[in-house]
Image (cartoon, rainbow, N blue to C red; front, side, top):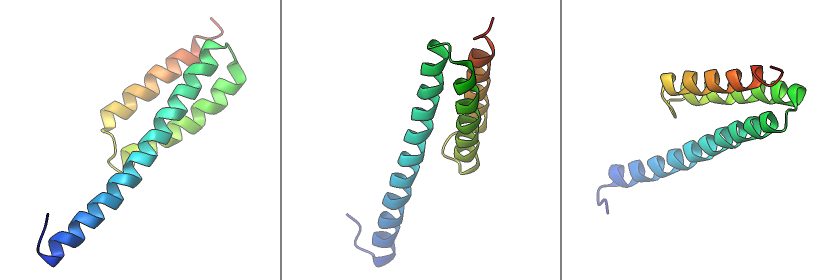
Length: 88
């Protein structure tokens, strides 16, 4: 455990940030799973609206550095491909 006052503060800040990042990452993953569930149910309209919200959450995670840019782009691409193939 840290003994220096600044190090103790740093540990507290890191723990708060980690909790916030985990929360946002979890929400993003839940949104992705929701879109995938709607795709499996062949619900086109709901899937498209859910995709918009999910893309927004992924973009926020990328912007805050929670996930890498390429990872976010890959997830958005795969979800869009799934949603677009519902009608086909």
